[in-house]
Length: 218
Length: 81
Image (tube, rainbow over all chains, first blue to last red; front, top):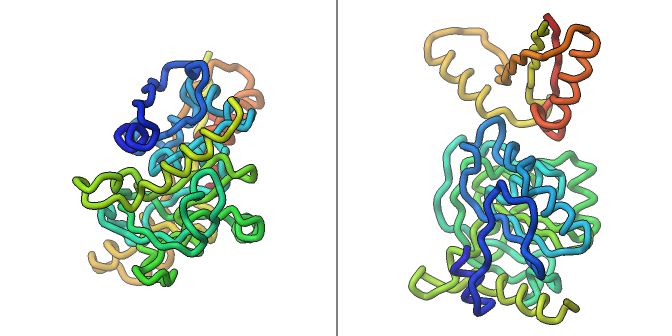
C-alpha cells in the first residue's frame, strides 16, 4: 500500500501505529491497509475498530476527510460503523487468494475519477471474510444513492454469480459513504500498481485520489 | 464481590452461517441422521465488579451492543449468575 501511495503521490506516506491518538498535521488521506489486526479475534476488524487511533480517524472523516479502507481496512470501517453492513465468512468457507475483476459502478468520485462508469479492471483478492452483507433496505439505499463503488464481475464486465467468488450481496466489492469520501473495498488495488507486480490495473484509484486531493483546498 | 455474566452471540436468522453449515455436513459424514439446520455462535463469559445483578446485566448488554456482537449480523443474549 505504501508503494502504491508513494508511486501516485510522489512521496511516502506517514505510517501510524494503532496506539497513536492523533493524525499528523495536514493529513489529507487516511488509509487503513489490509492485513489481520488483532488476530481477527472476535470478528475481523472488531477490536481494531475500537483502537485508540480510530477516534482520530472517525473525527477526520466527520470533518470531510478522505478515508480508504482495503480488505481488513474495509472490515474495520464497517465494524466502526463508518460504512454500513458487515463482512461475513466467504460463502465457500475458503480463503480466496486470486485475481478478480471489478466493474466501476460509480465514476466521478475521489477514488474513481480516472475511470469511466462501467470500466472493468483486474484486481487481487486475498481474504477469508469478504462476503459483504447488509439488510435489503440498506442494500437498496446504497444502490439508490449510487454508493456502490465496485462490483465483482467477469473479464467482460458481467456481474455473474460465478464471478462473485466470496458470495457478496449483489456482487458488491466496495462501497462509499454518502459524501463519497470514505471508500471500503475487499480487493487490493495496491497489488497492481507497477509492471513488476504484473500490471498497473489498480493505479487509477490512487491517481484519482491524487487528482482529487490536489484540487481540494488545504 | 463479582458477578458472572454470560453473553451468547448468534448469527441472526437469514444471515449465512457457513460455520454452522460445515458442522452440519461433518455430523452427516459421521452418520448422524436427521440433523436439520445447525447454527454456530459464541459464548463470552465475563467477570464483572458489580454486586447488583440488574446493573451487571445492563453493563453486559451495553458491552454486547458496543463490541461483543455486531448487531448487523448477530443477536445476543445476556444471562447473569
